[in-house]
Amino acid sequence: AGGIAPLVALARDGTDGQQVHAAWALANLAINADNQVAIARAGGIAPLVALARGGSDGQKEEAAGALWNLAVNADNQVAIAKAGGIAPLVALARGGSDGQKEEAAGALYFLARYSGEENQAAIARAGGIAPLVALARGGTDGQKEQAAGALAELAAGSLNDDNKVAIARAGGIAPLV
Image 1 (cartoon, rainbow, N blue to C red):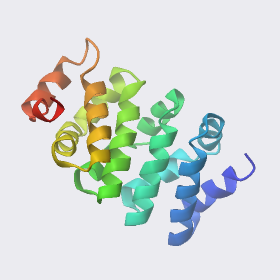
Image 2 (cartoon, helix red, strand yellow; image 1 turned 45 degrees about the horizontal axis):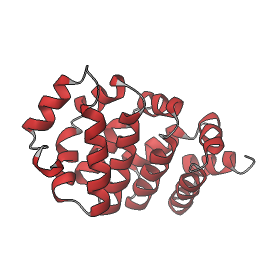
Image 3 (cartoon, helix red, strand yellow; image 1 turned 45 degrees about the vertical axis):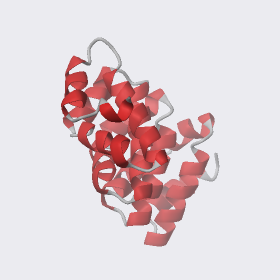
Image 4 (tube, rainbow, N blue to C red; image 1 turned 180 degrees about the vertical axis):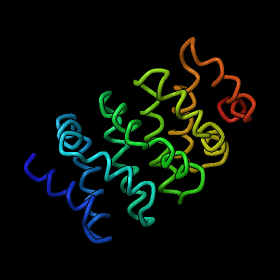
């Protein structure tokens, strides 16, 4: 865990290139469950959200990938939402590059997956359903997979009737059949 704090510092305060590589390194480290916790404890979520929101194209893609891997952890799902991470991920799913769209859809999938209706409702409020339907309909294979997973989670549960209706109204049934 000794390398995580310096990477978080670079993601927050480094040069443009340092931020890209730090976010990439954090994304790779976040594949490990212990590192997911360590990155969050080191304050890594907020700078990754900031990069996803306002970074360069490379920073956005790597930050979205890091948030995807961090979102496997339930506590991190709450922290990502509290840090304002849902809106920039929805924006990337809607209008990012192909890589950004896939990474963002993957992050939204996991943010909706285990965190219950709170994040699911937040994704819908942020306008996340329409871009996920668009990716499920016409994205790359990876985008389709992650978007379909996110839509499945957004429709899961008895309290998500509004999401179910919104997915259907956005044309989300046909691409899933």
